[in-house]
Image (cartoon, rainbow, N blue to C red):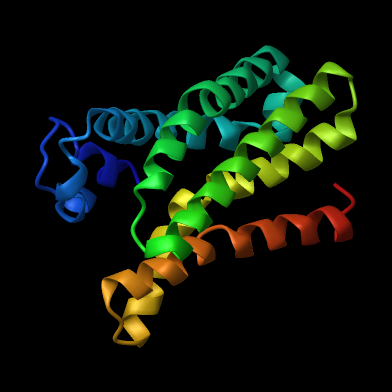
Length: 186
């Protein structure tokens, strides 16, 4: 994931994902949203990962709290607005755009609910909402994995691939999170 992100620095317009977005590069809000999302989502992935370490929680509570704030506020105030702008211009026609809007709204909602729960000192609800939120955060990874898997087994044009991949990137993650919550009593 980090290697994929580093490719976009310095800000070149003809590499990776941007090769398919040439029609939008002149739209300044989209371009700002893209680079904001690409360079800040790595922080969300890393900060979120630390939230599930019992060792960090028990031995370094201040680190857990700081990383949690970085995770939540990055999503709520930086990545959600940027991702919504990108969702409007997503590949995959209406199904692709809809998938990313749904993903972004759920990502915001579960993160917001996790913050609200911890402010109420409802640890159980906080853990459950954080698990859901991070499952959606990991869609950045699973979206890319599904793209490789799907295109490796069937010949499909990029538009239809993106229609499928946009949903496969997060729905299985969310279902797995719900399964963990229900069976492991998170």
